[in-house]
Image (cartoon, rainbow, N blue to C red; front, side, top):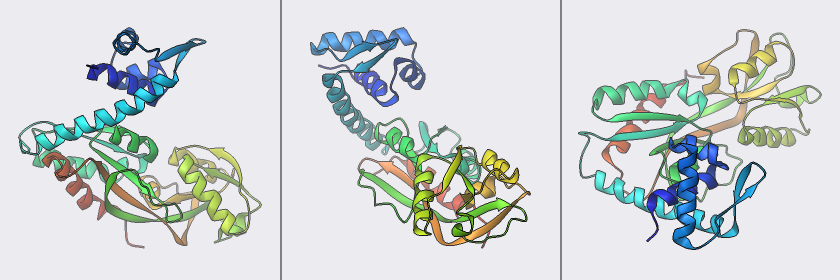
Length: 295
């Protein structure tokens, strides 16, 4: 019988790409990761990893087993969650993955309200952009993930159950005093963008406006983005949550009509969810309802 701990180690190596990153994610020592991989190879009678320079990569057999391990561990975590649903909110823990602008706005209020209502339940946070947050959720490393989607992206078919929290506007961000209220007004300027998903949305939006943006800077730090704009190094777009978390007084904001993104709280596995998960999502809904000022 395959050992669950070793399967979790293999899945972590596949997900994070290295022994070092897997050890960090699982809070294991690196030699322990290598030991578990070696024992798993012995258990399976298959070569699962191979040395490449100073690192390793999974063999075809290793990748196949890692994919199955994700499914197995997800089902195991779902079973534990269903069992936890019968124990109430007397103890335990709940883990949340959230992107930075959510962590900088409504998540702390939701967390404070949750902790006050359920002091015996441990609440943990992980910062992660939506693709990584969704992977953490499916692998059972978190219980709730905050995700955002743009209207011009295809609906996800990833087995996650989503609860809408809020819809936020997108703003054109330019230096103070620079004219132009539409994307096309800045077609000849340099642009600044953030995460891969936001970058793709910016490129699609500019294409719809008739030009391809000259992207000169890329950073996920919305404080740095605004500082670059204020210094006259480019223009950008930012969602309302990022601006609510931190507003640079030396930038000009123009709300872009029909540009927005939707924030969801996602969970994985079949209902019923554990009471702690349900309670956290409810507190997130309440905090998100007042996260943004009226337009």
